[in-house]
Amino acid sequence: MFSLVKQILIQKIILVSGTISAEKHFDEKTKEIASSLRENGYAIIDFPDADFAHKADRIRDDLSGNFDLDYWRENLWKNNQGLRIQDAWASNEDVKSIAANQAIIDLLSKIYGKKAFPFQSLNFPVGTQQHMHSDHAHFSSVPERFMCGVWVALEDVDENNGTLEYWPKSHKIPSYINEHLGELSLTNNSSIEHYKNYEELWKILMDKLNIKREVLTVKKGQALIWASNLIHGGTLHKDPTRTRWSQVTHYFFDECVYYTPMLSDPIFGSVHYREPMDISTGELKENKYSAHFVSEDVLSREKQMERILPADFNGSEYLNKNPDVQQAGINPIKHYLMHGVKEGRKW
Image (cartoon, rainbow, N blue to C red; front, side):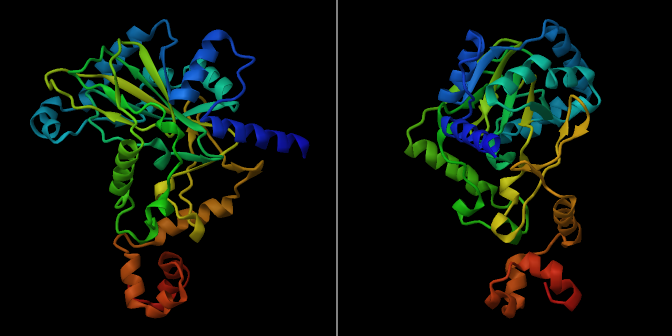
């Protein structure tokens, strides 16, 4: 019991500080990175791989065929859209090597106090031009904030070929979820219908808190580590004749529950669980809550709900057509899946 209480207290300290476990056993370089992550929400490092330059060149050569840069320049660039390929690690050994870099995994594990593992890679040939956002809405954990990202430049990045942008210290704001926005993901036609409200919230928060944006211009081989709740995005790719190759790897940590907050409504018993794969080992990571594994029954129940629910189901319309359900205050999706489909209810 004492060891469990001690672990909980340590986690509380980590969460209050923004990320970081005790620093007294760190070497000076690790302490510097940990301090920057805790205070600013990010740290800039040289990627720890002596063969990085060659791997970066091979990645660019191998993945180039996946992108139509002419189409991007003519149609997407002007609309502030980027290009990406997700999880290229599954077919490209160099992408996998960067994602599963042992020195990075060891560094993150030491700083966060739990073993890190990479679960997703993204490769970009141009600037993302992505709206400011917090990863917390997309990838989160219980305990929260045990997730981080590492972006690394596969070529030089300057103000003309699409820099990253970020808001220092923004990782210290609360972790907002659907309930704070007055949203219920279960009743939306689209699972990301309400995402624009998150974007508006982040913009308002940065304005009200007077947190100023910074941009990142780096050389090939430099990397940015950021905390899960740091507000970040991509600036305008000013010169569309140029590329801006880069790779992002997202990391979770052991002994957590993994889920997607913007697709979850926990008060109604709906949690969009993730079952992430450790890229470095190919192992599916189990969800664990307070030292207890989340049972397969719980996970399969959520999956079953997603399979049965009609693609065009609208929770609000269901309540309108079934006023007895509305008056009872029952979640429309839960009611439809458990009773309505058998009763032939209109939806």
